[in-house]
Amino acid sequence: MNSKQEDKLSMGLTVQTTCNRYPSVIATIPAFVTALGDLGVRMQNIRALAQIQAGKTDGITQDKARLKTAMCEKAFEIASAVLSYANTVKNSTLAGKVAVTKSDLLRSRDTETAGLCQNIRTEATANLAALADYAVTAADLTDLAQKISAYEAALSKPQDARVSRKTATENLDREFDEFDNILDNRMDPLILKFQANKPDFVRDYNNARIIVDSGGGAKPAPPTPPTPPNP
Image 1 (cartoon, rainbow, N blue to C red):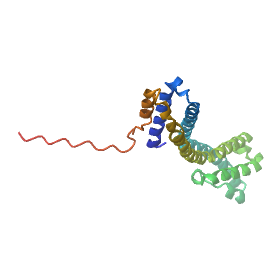
Image 2 (image 1 turned 45 degrees about the vertical axis):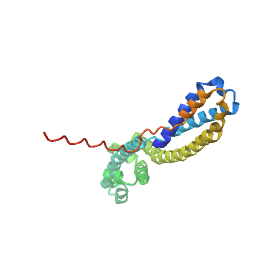
Image 3 (image 1 turned 60 degrees about the horizontal axis):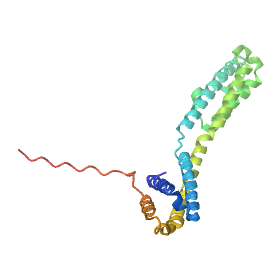
Image 4 (image 1 turned 180 degrees about the vertical axis):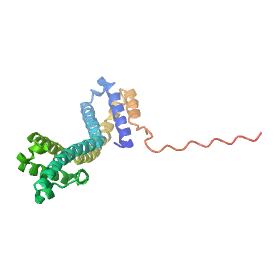
């Protein structure tokens, strides 16, 4: 939420609290009670959307980077062993398929890295029996497969979080439109009905409807103190 929306929500909460202090008064107009309930629902929706909107993607991005590093390190470890085997048996085709550096893997585009690591796993799987003397086991290939799967699952999470935040912002605007509609067009027009029997409630309600600027914008610089006179 921006500062204006926060101030408006604070006003709505004050209105809700004020009305709830006069249960027997507002009960005389059921339509007012219904509108107050609808206002409460809108404010609950607004708070829920604000939590989504305020969500940060830093942790998600860091998790993705951590999973990428773990996957690339394991893939490079296996690729190095396969390369050693390929050079030993003079299989230049196999050597060309696994001749990568860890930097090559880490610097690859996020959407390409998992494919490169999977290619390494495929070549190692095809030569697993020969790789026993090179300390590559089926458990290593399973470990790499799990790391690839974990990384692929994390790939879309930062973008998904950004999409969720954008959608929450759009929905937040719609909720505030309904919030305004309830107050301006359903509750405010009925307030005069309470004037004759409960003027105190009317005054409290009108005061509660005032939106207080919390000062979310830039604050003005303090005035420069006057220069003291020369002695």
